[in-house]
Amino acid sequence: MTDGGSGNAEERAAEPAQAEALDRPLPEAVRTRVIEYGAEILGMMPAAEVPPRLRRIAKFEPRRRVRLAGPDIAAQLETDEEFRGRVAERMRQAWPSLVEELAGGEVPPAADPVIAGAVAYVLRPPGWPALIREIHDELEREARAKAADDTAETIAELRGKLDEARAEHRRETLRLRAELRQHKAEISELRHKLHHERQRAREAVRAAERSVAEAKELSDGAAARLHSVEAENRRLRNRLAAAEAQVENARRAARAARSAEEVRLRVLLDVLQEAAQGLRRELALPASITLPADLVAGEGRAGTPETPGRGLPDDDPGLIDQLLSIPHIHLLVDGYNVTKTGYGNRPLADQRAKLLAGLEGLASQTKAEITCVFDGAEIDAPVALLPSRRVRVLFSSPGETADELIIRLVRAEPEGRPLAVVTSDKEIIAAVRREKARTVASPLLLRRLD
Image (cartoon, rainbow, N blue to C red; front, side, top):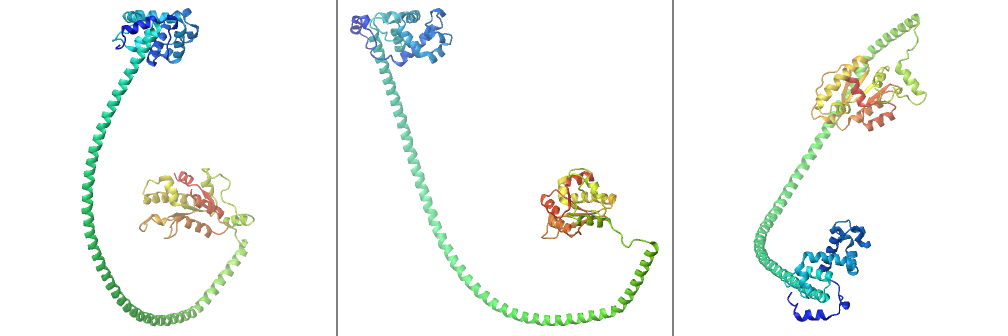
């Protein structure tokens, strides 16, 4: 230490031992080191000799003791001379020369001030408060010196950054000036182009005025030609009316010529009808035959029309066969809804061919009337299909969807005709059910065809 002279040592020796005490708290670094030494000694003491206040942390590792009970260890060292004596004994073994010089009232110049302060606090040689004050002052001087060094380094760093910022500012200024010159050149070029475009615009306006005048002349000529064309049309319409009158007269003459033949045919039909009635009376046949479709229609008129195939649920595999067993059943198939459910990864032509082949076989087995409807908007050219003897194939017209065509077919059927629609489209299902037709899910038909 730089200021530990003999005069200070004499003053410290002259202070009475009972009045020795610190006039300010220990430096934080010295206090931390003292607590660390006390925590280390706790682990070496027999359990019976550990102060009661510190027994709960004696089994912890030293760093944990410092973290959890640092204030308790510091208080115990302050008040418990026996505990402090154990720590002092450990210090005498660790730093004998430092302890000896501190006992003589001197702080070694080369000693760590934090360690020297901790040893002086624990051993408490004569004049120890003055030693700790000197160490405190020394630590403060070191802290101030370190702060001054850090400040100088910070100032130097800030000066370097300032120089860099100035250089960057100069570079940025030069760059902006270069850009400004470039922008001025571009503005000059744009002004030249603007002048050129204005001249072109004036020329375009003059050309447009000439075009308007020419168009007016052409319009006047077209109006004159239109007037002559209208006169010609009126003349042609008059001739057409006369021709239609001649055709009508010819038709009336033809009908009059056919009237004699019609009379002869009517007489022949009456003879055949009377012969048929006589044959029916001779064979005792009933006057009329009630068809199955008429029976279904008759049952429906008594109340709400029955939906065919009501006996089985919609997901029953036997529903298709039950529906096709009904006499005169008409099965409408939403073509693309079925094909895209079963094999939508194929081209549309292959989808149609596969479905129609399956429906042809089904119609051959059941003799049922089957109509398959496809959306005409799905194709770009007229479709060439193999002729089907048993399955009717329809494509929706332009402006009409397959859904609308199916609903139109359902409404065209007479009341009481057994009718089923194969689709999984919710909108079609709702519409045809309102018309009292039965619906069948597409997967059921696919399973039946397989």
